[in-house]
Length: 352
Image (cartoon, helix red, strand yellow):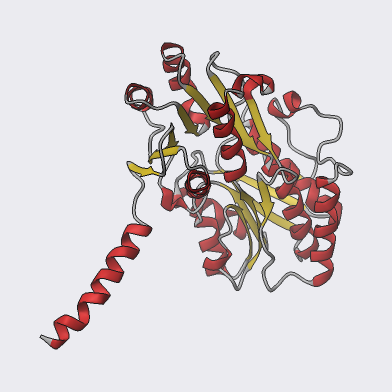
């Protein structure tokens, strides 16, 4: 009986921890009354990337805005996406964050039928309906800084980049990373190979191993999983994360990372809807970078020397102060149409 009584507090603790990190498959967080906000995720919160950071950002936003009732659904961007949007719109959602480029067709189909609901397209590149907007982070600014680290620290002058799909945003990220690497090491090359999906840890591992076999001694990625980091740790290869700060999983090989920060942008969008100023935002589009807190460079790992840290800090400040443009002379519209690779990138884009 003493043993059983002693185990009860432990069981309660474990249950509470399980609830804290459990699935957000269809969770409802009622923070107050006033505005019903929904976050529809592309994949699982446990991806440690795109969805995970969106979950953290929206949760923090809802905690800080007392009038928000937040609901969230994982794995919502599949073939049932349009019906999922209808269900939430019919059940009183005022604002729906469709957190994936893959929601494009669902928003086009559903949004016109619900003019009183605001649909926000995560990663969107155009205006899909009168009541639809777009939001994104200038993650390429952080990737440029991460590229500086990679160029400074590669010994083989070969840096591996595991890429999901050749969308314009991924291509912008590859090119920004390559430009950063070239700025610190003109001889460095960025080797790109494609996964073929946003979230496929098995394929991602295979692509990472392929790049390592070609002599890449630093690995980075644009994908929704941490498979590249796992392989880098297993093989003893330096790693730069993407989307989230995953250095805690591979501290012995971790250098830094490009990180999404969704709380500032979701907060501003929610407040604009709540205050009735959403339509006054140009094009109903939000695109936040380092200056707005929408993206960040992750803390440096122990392997990054002080001179490299100082250089990155210097360039970060120049970007924030608008003294340094990663793609000088290119408008946002031109960035969203980007379909080429920098001269120091080794890889191919599929024919359009």
